[in-house]
Image (cartoon, rainbow, N blue to C red; front, side, top):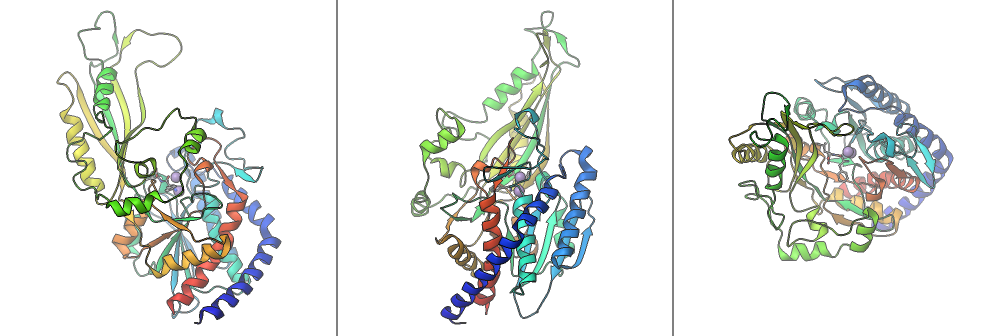
Length: 469
Ligand code: BES
Ligand code: MN
Ligand code: MN
């Protein structure tokens, strides 16, 4: 199709859709708030009913929006909600992925308003899941409704919305391999990442992988009087702290043997290209109240959070932490440790390297147990594909600016799984901001971003269909 014809068609589509959004925006907002009110915390079994309730909610919303063959597909864990609208086999097919589960809301006392009672104030929705990922995933359902109601659906579409992303998507790989035909698509479209700023649109072009471990150090078989035994028995907390401290050297390199063996190093040219992305260190520090940044020597902050692997303690406990003092040498100490991985590290291999290393550095006075919780593979998504081009044009139309490709530091295990199981690439059209505080107290999502997402997504379908011709 000629460029001009596309442009004039796009203009009329933009007009029609902005009218539709203006008319229905309040309802869109009310609906997403209803979804957010369901506390679908996947990691905590006591919320199991709520997680299932969120799946039912998505199912009903997909049906109402006009999807066919909507089903709640059971897995060994939480279900995957599937729905589709196949309008013409000659048109390309977009597979939309998102997740309806959320992280726990703790620490509750740091929330300004209750995490599962969405509050709309100063242009934001404040709530757990507002950005990650209910708000962003719901934009796709509303964009779909809009395309159905305004007769402008330009591609076939399939939805696959899961409830176990925050616990590592453990049952999704099997679901994908068992449903290859059903999930066949030309591209996977995901809004579960962020962009640089509301006036600096960007498209996430890669994600880090993950190896998540739990370690347990055991010394005496019971908690001991620290006067009677102190000095002669290994204190598991002291030992654990020493072991953890030794996992980084003075340059903040990770000391786990073999850890960097497969790390893909970027060329000087690639690093120079990355450094062009707008980034303000002073603003970064101010936003987090940091006296200074910290990280691997020889790399910038942006590099440290995207192209370099990390090792972090997520939690550490043991002994007495109640009120006042208790003189005790604890029997056990624990820590949760996660490693973010970059191409071409392999989660299972890193898990094994870590386990061997951690066992090897334990002194003979303690017992050590290392368990792997979950993992995911790193991925780089193409920026020279038709789908990327379509996303770029869609952003250019709504933001008036070309989006910048940028590697993300977080993990979405399914992206690499999709590539491995179905050989389909993803486009990560995230509309969140770092300041949205995902996984933190007072998570929020901008009303601007919610609306901009609903405007941009249908344009992706338009451009993708015309570029694919
Ligand atoms: N949506 C996030 C991942 C994300 C956010 C990537 C922002 C890039 C930018 C996702 O829900 C998430 O939190 N993933 C987990 C991984 C999972 C295996 C627990 C993560 O990254 O910690
Ligand atoms: Mn997410
Ligand atoms: Mn998350």
